[in-house]
Amino acid sequence: MSAVPPEVGPSRLQRVRQWLMPTRRAMLNTAAILLLLAAIGPEVPLLRPVHSFLFVVDISMSMHTRDMHIDGEPASRAEAIRRSLTDALRELPCGTRAGLGIFAGYQTMVLYQPVEVCGHYNELASSVAKISPKSIWASDSEIAKGIYNAMGFLEESDRETQLVFITDGHEAPPISARYRPQFRGTAGAVKGWLVGVGESVPSPIPKIDDRGKQVGVWREAEVQQADPYASGRSTSSGSEKMVDVGAGKISADVAARLQTSPGREHLSQLRETYLKLLAEELEFDYTRLGGGTVFAAKLVSGQASAWRWVPTQTSQGLGALAVLCLLFAYWRSNMNPVSWTLYWLSWPLRRWQSSRQARG
Image (cartoon, rainbow, N blue to C red; front, side, top):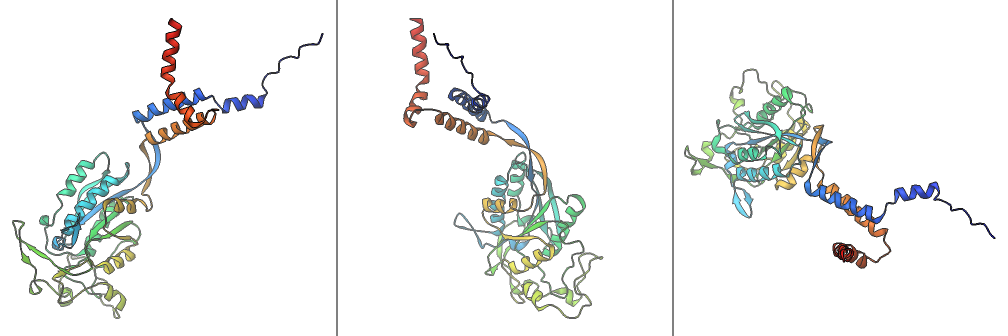
């Protein structure tokens, strides 16, 4: 009489494989739990690179110039800025901080210190909608000084925040290469963007009265056509110094890049070459104003301002894991895809039939 061989249990390797390769039912249950959590949409804090921006909008008179288009219709530069900036704020990822300021004369006024965009979008969008050249407090438009002024705010209070200065680059009164405003800070200490708005073809600048109505356009005789500093104009502030004062030779390249146009200063265009010169000197990036989605993507493609713990939605990640569990459950099945799908879709019906038979 032969002996019955003893039963051999699963080996350690087999037990590990069983633990790593759960059953189809376990995968399906896990997928159901993950889908339920995805529907709830929990947020978890994750360490992420975040950006902080101070948007400063030029509201000088040239912003009335109607050389832009919105939905195929003619629009002023100010209207185009409002549309693009509102859309860009909506597209910026949660955790991004955004502040808002306006520029006229030679000064920048900060309206909002940077705040988180998702939690404060309505307030930011409402403020952007009210930005208008009608709020101007000075007739001049000394672009370089306005940029330096805005950089001074950030250099003193928040170096993590990047300056985003939106302008057409039209200096009024015009400047000469010998008497340019001098930046007295450290280039690169504040990061930022110069954003050009307008077309390269000169257009008339509408003249707006105190009631906000257009009363013609600015004429040549009404606008200063040359740098008045060369004729003894005083600086905007007593301590201000100019580039090249007392200097001899002036760079012909710099003079050309200023894009001054004596006799045509009453017309306005995007002075892109000048803005690129300023961007190079300040170690800023330069871009043209575009649609809000593209604008936001360019801003966040640069170097992050800081790393912070940010509440992050997990719905997409949980949904992706649920799909992987479903695919894994199918892979463990011996059925073809159609039969496998029908089998699990009919599971509630089969459970109902089983319980009915058990009662009968």
